[in-house]
Length: 317
Image 1: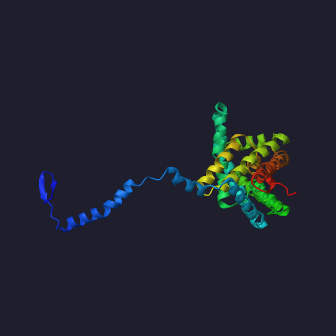
Image 2 (image 1 turned 120 degrees about the horizontal axis):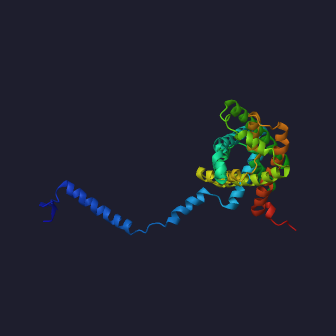
Image 3 (image 1 turned 30 degrees about the horizontal axis):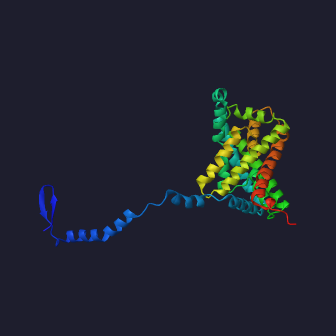
């Protein structure tokens, strides 16, 4: 008879024992399956990952179509709803600027010894999270609308009246939301001992009209690229990555964002900066807003309509 050895003592194998029969049966049943599994080749890593990547990110043409669809939805939105969501977005961007001034704006030693690193710190901590709140919650940001709603107009899916409604109403909501948050922050006094709000307000209103205008163009080119790329991402981590780099870049590069300035400069004024409201509106907000419109409408909406939409199609003879 067959025998199994346990330690140094032979033990007879009794096929009649119920435990032995059960184990033998399981071995006979599972052995062929295990052999097949062992021989089956492992799937290629690229084959596993490719479908997931396709699900997480739209192709460029699909991304443009998605931006147009978002623009149509925004164009058809009721003015009251745009205004309410604009208030929220103004506060979101204000919170981002608040964090930027609190962290990056209070590193005078770093600014003196390593100004490049200080700018990266200011950019990385602040405005990106403000735009994240806006895009994830569906709030209405004027600067983003200069691109998204314009794509719908470029494709003939919205008209000039809807474009004007979206821009003007979201702008008004952003202004009140940002200034309102600035008043709350000034009343709270969390930056009372910091010179960052005052210094920043003075610096922004000291730019020439041309400088503010051009910086506004460059800024909203990056901001609208962040909004556009985030709309192509289909999961939250993808949207965060799409937002983080362009937004932190525009801060580090010293560019000008109209809605962020609606918080920063009023906070500086309320903190004692020698800046008048008239100087803020005419020397900073007006040229920056015009520049933001050019950056979003022409360099993002116009460029990608030419690449994937109507503007790039030949005119019928």
